[in-house]
Length: 303
Image (tube, rainbow, N blue to C red; front, side, top):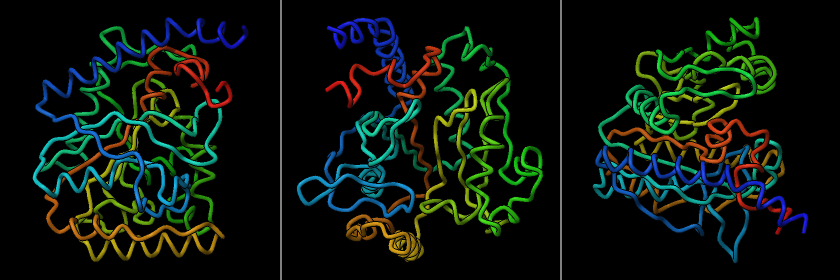
């Protein structure tokens, strides 16, 4: 009976979620994007050191549809998007689900700055004209959004240089404790130009190869999206995959097969940009929900 009450209590939020997803689909249709579906089970996920794929009958449940969607870019699909389920082992909390809904879109002929502009348009379309009220704060989406480099954010909020934080092994800790809670409080914030070592599938910046053309979007101190100008050099991508695999091995984590079909397609991929946006988190913010549990029909514990 308690489980049914919890499910009934979410009815208003689930109606709001449905309306938000409908507005997202309408946005991409108006922009000339093709909605695609790629398989949930894949033979080889990207070997990211901090993300754990869940095994599934000898393959893996996707942590992201990224590799398959980039193969579609390489095959001549210029604007594609997908709303799909993804899985990551060990991710559970007030803001995390092990099984969650991801929006990803890829655009040929664009870079990460153009994708920032498109992301602003999308969130405005989903939020409506009233702005965002989240955790007692009013976040203005109509005005210009804040854009700050990772380097400047470390100086401003952590009192330490980005390079110094990397050398001291403090980068992730300071991002979580000092920087992330300060982002996206008055307007949504794009934090961009991450260290090259933090952009495994991103293109390096031509005039400053110490940083990658990567941004993240924060609203109310919560990360909503992660985006890149895409790396199209297959040799460089293989080397980065090997470095990530070595880091996983050093951490005692399982290895993954090499995504050879993705690497083989990469030389045909046009200059492009792509982004992954957490639907559950966006809905959580737009509906001012206290927990990510409040914006999904069932949590894993309720099944």
